[in-house]
Amino acid sequence: MKIFVTVGTTKFDALVEFLDKNLDQSYEVLFQISDGNYIPKNFPYIIYSDAINTLYNEYDYIITHAGAGTIYKLLDLNKKIIVVPNLDRIDQHQTDIADFVDTNGYAISCNDFKDIPHALEVLPKKKFNQYEKHTFFKTKEVCKFIMDSLD
Image (spheres, rainbow, N blue to C red):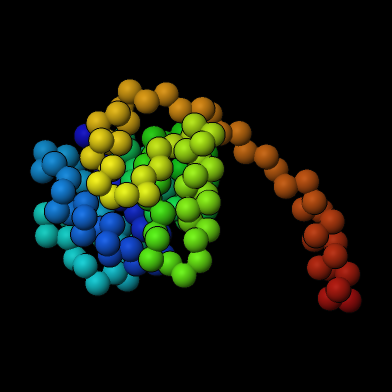
């Protein structure tokens, strides 16, 4: 099982540490840790990569923070993902998006780290709903507004 763990551009040391200490050593895992303070001891890691999309495609499963940009990119790539909201953040918007993808059958959400090992067990056979991207219908109007305001 090839697993890529990503925390995006902000540190999520609690997730990285938990997974580093608790993932089965037989898994092939790569961590993307951003500017985190916890350095994985049991698996390789990177800080960040300009080739993140290539990494997404190289791994079977992704464990990700609940950042909207990351989640929607992974859904566009039809990746099987486990979403873990960073509850240490001041705002709780990550919980909202994690609940959204779980409720709609696009991904598995784990608010408690202890649920991740079980989620990994069911992930290979889990059937997810196909996410359909909807184009923002006001793009032209927003661009026109910005251009008109610059005149």
